[in-house]
Structure formats: structure tokens, C-alpha cells
Image 1 (tube, rainbow, N blue to C red):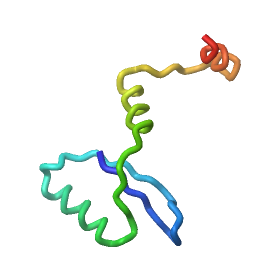
Image 2 (image 1 turned 90 degrees about the vertical axis):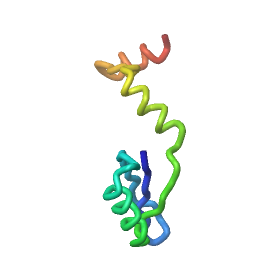
Image 3 (image 1 turned 180 degrees about the vertical axis):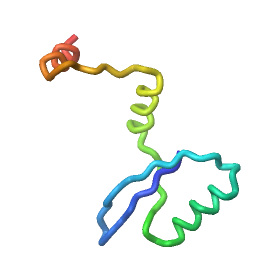
Image 4 (image 1 turned 45 degrees about the vertical axis):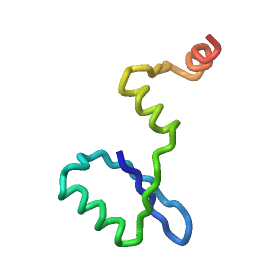
Length: 76
């Protein structure tokens, strides 16, 4: 996993997550080239982001029918 942030006028405009094989030379060189442009900066993934990604992957997500259903689930 690789996170890049697009920065314009000192403000973060977007965060991009890339998943790639680090042993793939073309992918690694492409990432290096993108970073060399100076438009993106490399950041570490936030723990909460990784944790939520794992929750989705393992099916630990609840889909509420409506707002009342969501509140009911949260109070249980």
C-alpha cells in the first residue's frame, strides 16, 4: 500500500492510495517518477484507514436500512 497526497498552494487536495507489487520494477520506477514531479508527497497510512480497510475485507461492516436502523445498531 502506498499513499500519496496531491498538494496545491500548501493545501492537501486529495489523497491517493496505490497497491502494487514492490518487486515490479516498472511500478516502482513509475512511483519514483511521479514523486519526482513535486506534485505529490509520500505519506504513511493512518492506522484508522488501514483498520477500516481490513474491516471491509473481512466483512465486519453493517449496512443500515435507514438512519433509525443505524442508531439502533449503534446503541446495541
